[in-house]
Length: 117
Image (cartoon, rainbow, N blue to C red; front, side):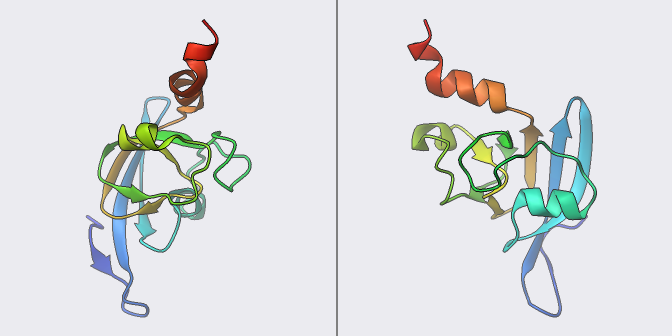
């Protein structure tokens, strides 16, 4: 288990991320000063992404366990962040995480669906 290991060089906590994408669970480490998307890419885990600046929602995920800091997630309303939606390109882990990746369509529907009916 990677949970709460401390990198001896930088004393930065490292957390374990379990990302489910299309029924496959990928597990990889992520430092608290590293975005979840950057950690996934470093571990060779192919998560959806595009703008990498918190705007487009391609990297949207639903956090089912744990917490992230995503101050730059302009593409997600605060109330949806509180429901667990996160943009992985700007999300810094604050704990071990379980997440469901590939949630761009679900986030879009939650954010804008009422305007399309």
